[in-house]
Length: 324
Ligand SMILES: [Mn+2]
Image (cartoon, rainbow, N blue to C red; front, side, top):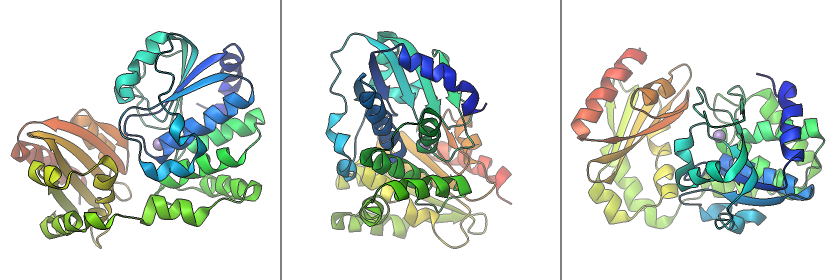
């Protein structure tokens, strides 16, 4: 699939719509928030009436984006001419906002995940070769000659930086840098501020839980696999939000010699959130899909109900096949 070949269809869908709902995935990351805001800014600039939605927790670190407070305000609206779904290709990740599909006359999905499973849509733009949905949105704006405002530039920078781990991950391409170059040429972005909030800052009250994680990391396959478990009592004790939990991953993934990592969070008794990370060719999306999850080659996730022992047994058997 090439974006250029779909551009007329996208243009037509937008031209024929007046009310538009834009939605990202549940527990939004920077790519989800950034691409939703960028698309919203564009649609408003061409006179559309736009509402933006995401389910779950929206981190306050994104408050530097003007539209940060604009999410989920159009919940009472009964009808939309068009629904634009960004940064997800599995309707399960819409959370409560899956109701928007039925409320909307048409659905357009723009995403970069592998193996999309969005059947109830009119047009699915799935481009896994792009590192972020923000990059796809930038390409779309180039093709449609959309003016890049300062807010669009901040939003797209957030998207792109977040999905590449601030340009550290293998999905970072020359195109990624090209897009950032052109955003920076157009606007004076607060690179240090945005990067500090997204990649460096942590709360001092999280030091005990960081210490707990560091103390309890286990290793397998000659130190190539790192495993961390945050049991229910720890989750309850430290009352960690989504953002703080995610901030813990780096202490597990970034150890010399570790090629892959498992981070289990027992959100409710016997109910696990599974995060898998890897370097290079090790495909953790494949492993996640075997337990009804999904994601990208080097970053994926799933949920599991059952015993931890059973879950770890399944995961260890899967990793045994991919870690050499
Ligand atoms: Mn993304």
